[in-house]
Length: 584
Ligand code: ADP
Image 1 (cartoon, protein in one colour):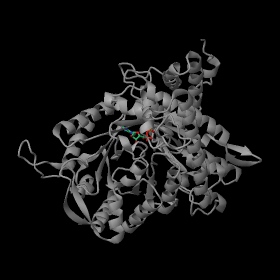
Image 2 (cartoon, protein in one colour):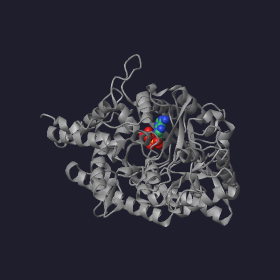
Image 3 (tube, rainbow, N blue to C red):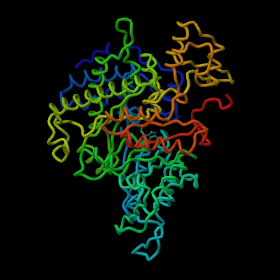
Image 4 (cartoon, helix red, strand yellow):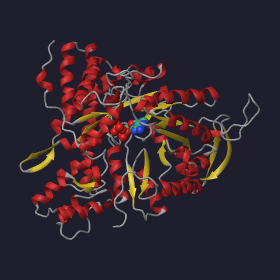
């Protein structure tokens, strides 16, 4: 079959300066000297071609060619991007395409070092790993074979951290890990404080696995049981209030630990017969069974606003079409990925979990002229995500009609539910899209913008002001644009409190620090309501926020049905990737 070349000739994607740097550094194929030997257009063709090969087994070469062209267009038009490992590795030797893995850590030397070895192999391919260390016997318990004492979860985390540091990921990216410890593990207090005491754990995000029993104890102000995971016996009791206060204090101080609500996550486990969910991937958006992995993808909402009768509205039809194609793309990725170990391949092919989500949500709200921190903003999020989730489920069901349901379907909660004959055990996840959003040139995930304009230092210390395009267009049509003003905004980050900008514009163009923590949590909850997996979101707090503010955030996240929560108080970490000028 001859490919219709015209379908590929959209002149390639338009790539911003920043995206070009990112792509050249980590995504494009390179020769032995380290120089790129493909262009971004080549990269997207490589990815589209490789992923579409899965279609051969379902439809044949004609279908594969047709889907390849569709996949190429949706990526180069930045309507959809798959997670980084797919862009990096598709059609190349490593061939590992998923971003998220969870590995079991058994309570034995063999088990611990098996997990470490598997993690190293996964990191090499650009994937992130999550672990629950909850099965490990506590520090100072006896080791049967040697008569010595065990060193406990935190000391083993350091070993994992060091290994991660050394695996430079085949020149792609440094590894990212999540460590989870159940709140009822005897070493919980050491775990809560471990990152502060030890800069050796910088390749880990840590989260406390909160149980319903703990939340009940906390509501009553009572003690709760610590349980030795090996001997399954209560070792002692701790005050729920004290543990919670310690946890919150450390989160306030330096952002760690986050929390995940384990029982809630397990209530949404689609295949409880296959095991319990103990951990998520590094950024928290993807709960997985041990030995499971999941490939993610994100639809850029900024591309789905259209004009109707003079007003900006959501282009639901266009969105629906892209969701159908994206779900198919991600299902194809499962077939085309190479897996680091056979157990993972078995689990992934059994459940076929995928996680399609969104990015560019804040850009979309700007275009729709809806403030992020408003009832209308929350309503928009719910309407949008309900549509997104329903469509993603429809798309997965449609795939099942031709390709069959996932292998473990009969062991899943869907088997007796009408209209739930899906191809994939989960379909939706809201990822952080840290790099994808740079490539696509949109706001990340469902986060508000960090700044409306900022100064970028380019070669020879030349400074360039970059202004959010929607804001710039508004400033020009409303007649308040000036370079001076944009420079001032770059120093402040936002426009609240500036005299010469109309009130209605100020109301729409809010940035992360104009938004109170409550609205951050409510937005996360609005998206979680219609997401199979979880939602990655940072709740930003002002640098003067108090410990009590963090407590409020955690309680609200629990009450509103979030699956976890991560906070960040401005200035609380030494190294902060994004920051607005501190003097203003
Ligand atoms: P991207 O934009 O690069 O696709 P995201 O920021 O959306 O990635 O993160 C999604 C998931 O990808 C994370 O939760 C984690 O599992 C994995 N990931 C992100 N960054 C890294 C990294 N540096 N190393 C390993 N895995 C990562």
